[in-house]
Image (cartoon, rainbow, N blue to C red; front, side, top):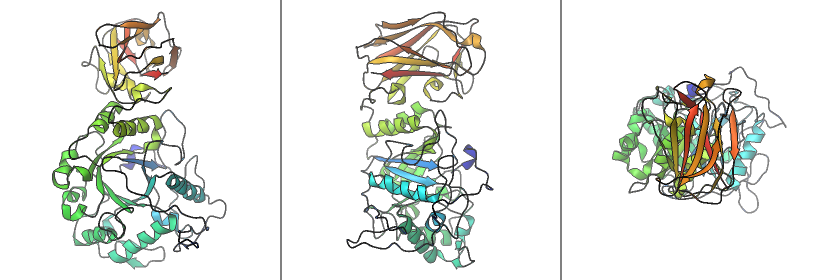
Length: 459
């Protein structure tokens, strides 16, 4: 899943197992009511229904992801809006059998034991969130024995699929998600394994209403393109395109149909406004939903995308929130002429690692939320270099027609003491406006203006 996009933890890191959580992998026991029990005897949540068509909000939790503008969050709080969470990094079998498998990947500043992870998986499920485990394919999947156990026993496709199912049942997952890009070829052996897994998970399994089977695919990496074939993808609930910055929807939907396809986005590669625009787009027939990879990098980025999907662009942002994180349209007085990667969209991408630069000492930015809002506070963040380019004088204005403007706040002789400094401006306002404009009339000196971020907070 393009792990190089994030700083990987050193493989030499020792995974500390706390609270005696080592355990042999065993089939779950049952209580007197027939509910499944974990190896520790805890009751698992009963099977959860699949999300409605068009409303699958898939968030990957990557243990090695580096947060942006926030601390490291656990599975239980890294997103409020996802209804499908995929556990990424490490292996399914090390969660199910902590004695014989330990890759050392499933730890970060928050997680120090697998007992924590197992407990948080069930906390999510208790909230109605389906939790899947990422399963990487491999070159070995194109052989007659795709998997070899810790003690050297080789499994054929049928045995490996059964093993994966046992692991899923032991941990209490709702299914699996394949990461398709690891050197396999879609020969007969590979296809047999995809089908064997389909006997346990997905629309053709014995549990089609609750056991999910998905795949993250990439048009430029084998055997991803082979999942355009119905004979391969028929076992899956949907495929997720991981181009992140390119509209590849029709590449997949042309053969699979809209309801079996969703695009994926990432904080590092996908501007928030682009992802929101895609989330708001509802084709006929409806698409499967939307995916955010390494969604724990930025909670605000992730939740804004999912909110745009479920609201169709009409759900108001919650009280006190930054409305630029939600559905809306950003425009600028100067939309061209900026250096590559420093265009006007960067002011609302929630990353201080980017900026908007224009060769003008005066310029305006305008945000039109999908639903009118009462804004009472805003922030401006200085860029990474050249203090003379910082905004110095400006007005914040509101409008309900995009033509007539009311001044809400005026600032003069402003300075930013450090680079990437966020300054907050609060004012009194009780009027809901359909447009907000930051009209910058002067910079520190010179003829270039730049800034990293602009936020607008509603009442």
